[in-house]
Each structure stands twice: as structure tokens, then as C-alpha cells.
Figure 1 (cartoon, rainbow, N blue to C red):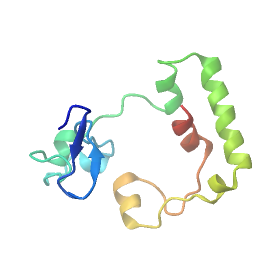
Figure 2: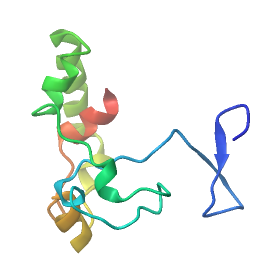
Figure 3: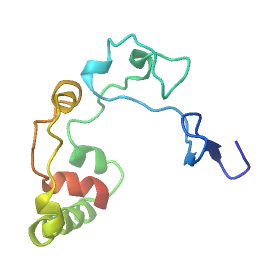
Length: 120
């Protein structure tokens, strides 16, 4: 690591990537996965699986911001979804991996909560 917090990627010596520590997993499929995680050398996936703390994004964010600020961000997200053609066209990947490991339906369209997670 150099003095600015950058670390050279072992997988690609031609480029540099940001390294902020370990990659964590939030999906139930990883809880019992005992294979080594190539992104976290020396660890298996199950060791890096984090349990869900909040029921939804709103509940989590209200621990860090007031209701008015959250509602403003939600309105902004809905406007993005309504008026930005780019967001209307986005859909989840049509792969088995998304469905099995991440519990995401194939070709599911973007919704306001997806945009909200970025706006916040």
C-alpha cells in the first residue's frame, strides 16, 4: 500500500484499484459457503457473511437522518425514475447467478428504492 491508501490489484498488475479492506457478503447463500474467497485471501465466504440488521432501507436511514431528509431523497429518486429514460431502461441481469445467489429476479426493472440507495 502506498501513502494515499491505494493498493495494487494482484489480479491485474496493469491497473490500480481502491482497497478499503475486506469484501463482505449479505446474501443467505453465502452463510454456508465454505470455499475460499479469491477477493479476501485466507478467508472462506461464510466467515465474511454479515447478518441483516434492519428490515428495510428506510428503517436503516432513519437512524442517521431525519424523516424530512429521507422523504426529500425519496421524492428525488421517484423523479429520476419518472423522467430519466436511462433509469427506465435498466433491468437486472438475465443470469442464473443473480437469481440463485442474490435473490434477484431476472430482468427485474429498476425501482425508486434502487435509485434511493444511490441518492442517499
